[in-house]
Amino acid sequence: MFGRLISMIYLKAIRFFVHSVLKKRGRKEKDYKEVNKVLKSLHKTLLDNEQLNEDFTEGPEPVQNKSSKELIAAFIAVREKRQEEDFYIEVGRAWVKDLGSRNLKASFICVLGFFAVWFGGMLLSEYISGVLGMIYILGTLIFPVVGIYYAFRGQRALKWVLAAVNIFNLLTAMQIIH
View 1 (cartoon, rainbow, N blue to C red):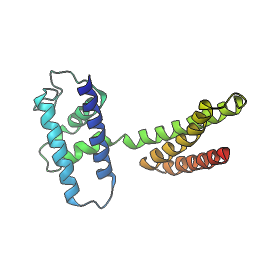
View 2 (cartoon, helix red, strand yellow):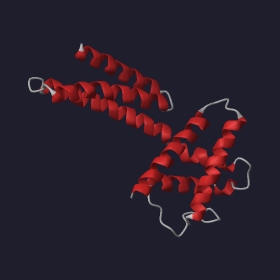
View 3 (cartoon, one colour):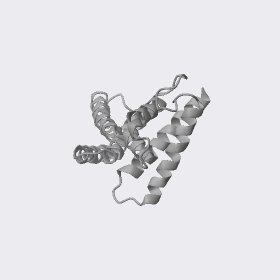
């Protein structure tokens, strides 16, 4: 159980690293070498655990978590390019292609969470005090900050709209506290 949790966290961290390297324009070739190295080691691990076959099809061993399934799906999706020099770069791009839209969804959920906490605080204002008041204040501050973080990690023009809404929510939260 603990090993699976560590594996999941490790894969999420590597996915974030690959996403960060691949989404930047004008990167040096050295950075792509790191992505190649990391994805080669993940490929070797998947082969050793028999979760992926040599011909880039799903292996006989079942995959335990969603992160591993997404990685295997990325290898399977670009298996036609396995002879090319930038094969692992293409695997990385296939693996992280939907990460930007997930960040935008998380930012939108933070907007909704802020409004839920804010509206709940307005309805229950006479009952909020002590620890409950501290939770309310932290909620009104944390949702916009996390929303700004996820908005700027997103892609497309919608990230600017969500960032502006979350900044407005943060300013509103500061006014509530003041």
